[in-house]
Image (cartoon, rainbow, N blue to C red; front, side, top):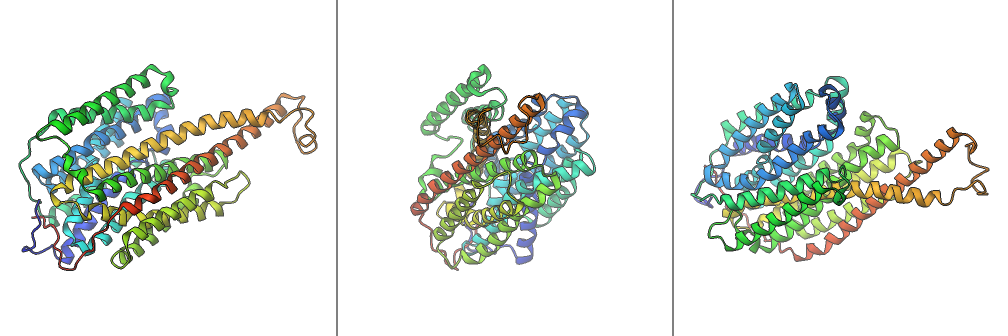
Length: 509
């Protein structure tokens, strides 16, 4: 990769077609992170699989993507970004169709694993393409466009998946990818030029240890709640394997001549701070997306479609903020935008701490809209500033590492809040139950239960469980609020480079 100031940048029409093509690719990968979640019960029933078995449909995709993301950067440098992107979209589209026609659990797990391998390159390499084809003064707008695909995809995934499953079949959750994948491939082939390649030796040992560490860690996070965490031998083995493999990988990285992950990546302060911040964003964003649907559907009794409409304002907020950010980033210090976005995200989770079983949907919609504003306001400037001072030769590896940390943050966040939700529900149920007696003066006049009948006791227990679950959800949102606020000081460590109009983009040819 090189900076070619003496070569023309892609024309406006060509740049627009490239942007649309890579946006489609990014959106498909981001969408498939969550679109299959709501279809799992139907899928398990048709394929005669238990809950534990059908969960591998999600686990196989997550683990494959986590393993392949670091490798995508090396492949783009070695063989060219266009080849990697086109091949990835083709395989992703074919494997999506194969998932749709799968007739057994083994088949769909295999095809989902293949889909995860192919999809891993789509988001980081799409980000690198948009950085390459735009001059520095336009990179803020380019990242705003990229954020729309990456953030809106997981948000609309459960809604779209639920609608397709209810009205058609769970198989359409996968078939929906095919026409958009074909359009993306045609757009990339017709508009994108190949990037510069450079000979690079493949560090198989570094790749193997990193893949083992990430894969074992992802499996541990995905199955931890199901296996009761460290009381399970399986989880203990996976945790030890991940820790040992990561230690070996770190030692190898700092001692090898040509390591798989170049340590030069982490000599840039902006990139380091950006990685920490994007890890936190992954925790907060995806944890909220994981908590809200079960809260609204199981606790509040909302149908799937209503849940989609109630959570839709988050996407509206992201759209409004990213459109505004694309114009503001050239005039306003990026640190102010990032700080304001983090503050709004914290404010939204503070509002979620006030959720109750008696609330109406306005609080959910407003808190989601504010969170969308915060994410849209901070995500694009953070993506821009993190790479503003990073050498173009590190861009492929940098975008891969940036997105890998976001994915790991989302996995850790989802697993943590789900585990805390289960445990805190039990704790709060016990504490609330301590105050309920036959002689409770404040309970008896208002209680519509007959304590002498089993039905009355069951109804009372269900009411206590409902309240305990709501408190547990509030505690999770409070944790996410504190985590958001803890990220604010990192903004002071960023040093955004002033971009000049004469700065040249990286030309892909």
